[in-house]
Image 1: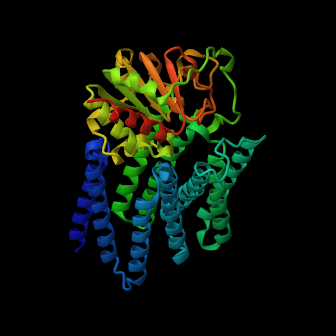
Image 2: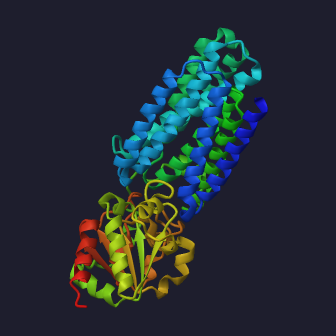
Image 3: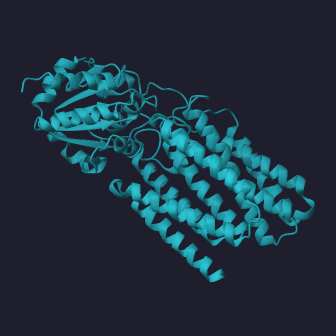
Length: 459
């Protein structure tokens, strides 16, 4: 029986690895998700069977309640709320690891030192992940300010909290059978540090912290695997932790910033006007009818989607417009910036929902060399990821950040409600360039007006 269970665990691990690999490509992501889910189902069922669960009432109840919540979440949560949902999932993973570690200690305080150390790691990482993710959820959901929150002496306070965590973890580890008070203080400080960890992060850095917290949830699960001596949990947690770290590193490179800078610089704590004095020119508005004539004559069109497109839920309208443009003889591509939106891969998921062909998606690095040959760049809801201040203004907070060079296209049409800065709070000189035209208003409404113009075009 033990050999059979190990074989199933190996199968689950293989499904996790292949599923994770398939998630790296849009055309295989759906199948990869299903394979990973199947692997987790096998792992959970075999673990319950192996551990000899005598009463399944709570297991079945949890499965039913969780399944109902999952179905309604998948159906009802809007694409604009996906980052918040991911933050919640990260937090739930963290608190699950914390509670398992706490439960194991409560059942048997007289544990070996090695297992006590793994409990400490499980509770510490799980606590940070839970409260940090909950704060990230509230920031993304505008329940608290989305800007970095900083105060005088903040690093000193964090240092004291970290010192307290280390001290009480040592006290707990030296005498676990007589240190339940030390454990509770250690647990409380871990939860507090999660809040302090995310507090100074905000603005355009939120996708990075979401990715990092996802990695933390995996590391917490791996530590919990050691606590309960479950190999498949160690494997699954390690995969999530490692992939989250890799993704976080990729996103930091996409912003041309170090992880230390993201976590501790408080970027955007003050909505600055850096570079505002260097912006010259006048924003030129355009009507949907005039935009239609530009698009109708274009042979090459690049659409740059951003969070505003998700807010307007315009993805299906954009897909319909792209189909009309292709029927008119134009080549249409979508330029995806690594940190567009509010979470990693946000735009890819958004466009996949509208059944946009994967072949039309282009990365920033692949689209930029050809941008000077593009007739029209349509920027829909994006802002910071096309801000030329990142190239041109050395005093700009985002200077050095790689962007999609939409300004190099022959004509730029920007669908936006106003000239307000993006999530980073940095003004965008692209709005005032000679080749830029602003189609003001709701993104979905603007795209639908363009669709109507094409449909009214004589055959």
